Length: 168
Ligand code: K1U
Ligand code: ZN
Image 1 (cartoon, helix red, strand yellow):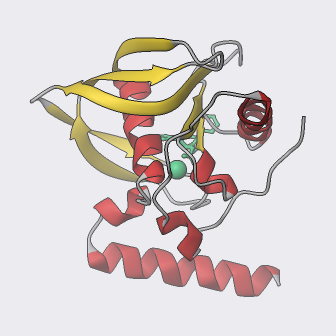
Image 2 (cartoon, rainbow, N blue to C red; image 1 turned 120 degrees about the vertical axis):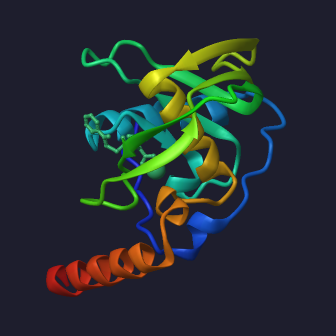
C-alpha cells in the first residue's frame, strides 16, 4: 500500500470530471487500498480519486472513529434524494483548515459497485449522506467551497495562497 499525494484547491485538476471504471481489476483494488490508507493517514473520513489525481469514479468513506467501517463506492449514482434539505459543516482534505456550512438533501440512496465489483445500494442520512454527496461532487469536478458565495471563495483562495507562500 502507498500514501498518495492529495491535490490542493485551487489546483485545476480538481475540476476534472471522472470517468466510469470499466473493470474492477487489480489496478482498481490497489487504488482503493492506497486511497483508504491515504484517507486514514490524513486523517479524513472520505476521499475521492479526483483528489489523488486519478480521474475515475472511485470513492472511499469511513465515518467511524475505529477505522473499521470502510465503504467503497465505484461508479456511484444517486438513485434517490430526499426533498428535505439540511445544512451541515464540511471540511476537505484538498482545502486544509477551511470549514463551512453547505445545504444538501438530508437523505440519499446511492447505487454503486463495491471493491469486489458487486452491485449494491445504500440508503444514508446524517454525516454519511453529507460525505457521500461531498465525494460525489469531487468526481464531477466540484469542491465544496464552490457551493459558497463568490466572496467566500475569493477569501479562501487568498488564504490558501498566503499559507502556501509562507510554507514555501
Ligand atoms: O477531502 C475530503 O473529501 C474528505 C473530507 C470529507 C468530509 C468531511 C466533512 C464533511 C463532508 C465531507 C474530510 O474528511 S475533511 C476532515 C474531517 O472532516 C475529519 C478528519 C478527522 C476526523 C474527523 C473528521
Ligand atoms: Zn473534499
